[in-house]
Every structure is written in C-alpha cells, then in structure tokens.
Length: 257
Ligand SMILES: [Zn+2]
Image (cartoon, rainbow, N blue to C red; front, side, top):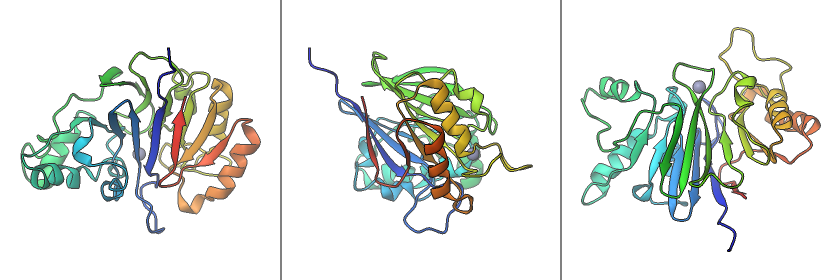
C-alpha cells in the first residue's frame, strides 16, 4: 500500500502579540492532509495572509489555543467574509476556549456574533476533522490554554505539535512523541531565563530542551518577540538540539512525514 500523504503545514503568521515588522501576521498555521484543511489560531493580520494559500470558506475548522487576541483576533474578518462574501453564507467549525464566544458578543455588542462558526469548546482530548485528528492538551499560560498535536485521523506517523503559548516547558514533554515536528513558542528568545514578572512564555533554550528530551525530529521556533533577538534565539537552539532548527517565517511550508 502506498504511504499516506504527509501533513502539509503552512506558516501563515508567526508574530507574537505585537510587531513593527510589516508583513508579519500573528499566530496562524494551516494544516492540510488529503483534502482536509484546518487552522491552528488566527491572530491579527492572518486572515488576509490566507489568500495565497486557501479560500477561507473551504476551511474545515479553526482551533484556537487560548484567549489572547494575537491568537484569534482575525475571527472578525473571517466571520464577515463567510457571512457577506459567500452566497449563500458559508460556515466553518470553530473550536475555541469556552469563554471566547461570550467575549466577542460583548466586544461587538451582538449576541451570537460567532454563530456562523459553530463548534464545540476546546477541551482535553481528540477532535476528528476529516482526515485529521487534533489532540488538545492543557498547558500553563493564560486560563484555558492548550497545545495541539495534529496527526492523520488514524494517528499513524509523526505529528505536528504546536505549543500554543505554553509557558511551562515540562507541560510539553508528554505531548511530543519521537519524530514529531515541534512548532514551539519562544517569546523570550535568546534570554537565559524567562523574564521576571513577565507572562508565562519560553526561551529558545527551553524549547530546544523539550525537542531534545522528547526525540522530536525538528524544531521550529515561533512567536519570538522582536526585542528578544530572534537570530540569537535560533543560534542558541541550534547549539542545544542536534536536529534541524528553523525560525518560523510567513509562507514557510513544512511537510510532516
Ligand atoms: Zn498568549
């Protein structure tokens, strides 16, 4: 029997909460396999950046890792696009933290604002979407934060682990399996330690240590703050992890197989 098709991962956006570097949307990763297409997060600027890669109306689902807006703010243009640009209006499944819908209702002053994106709340466990399976695992960051491990629906082969904004490295150890691709946030970049009193995020060294301890096939650093030396973060992770390491860049395409 022929080998199953690899997961295809497109970095649509990889910026953290803010950046002054133009053309860099916030967190958004397109994962495709055998005709199924999902997004992991949809941060600011990422909706229009989807254009070269996919018609958003053909997405099967959007998964949101946590409630910080750099991971979901472009649900607003997605909602408008599905409602006003598609005839008849289209729907895309949305799996998000439980509070997200009520927060949008309050912000926009419109009950049911996200009703065009129906779906279950993100909770620990596996959600099947077409040819893909998404395993959500709680991680330490903001309230209701999850990392996701995406595999083919039969669970076979290596997966993609997206850390979300996991701020406690040990939380990722039970999630990443040998030969997985680890797409890991490293907000604190080349810093020797997480910023004191700062939000819960990781350094590049911590991300590399997770990759090393779990036997990941490769490490992609993402969500690095501009002022935290992204190039230095890459060099540091390369020193600590033997496998391939790269900085996420908009438009980067990875094959996981
Ligand atoms: Zn966050």
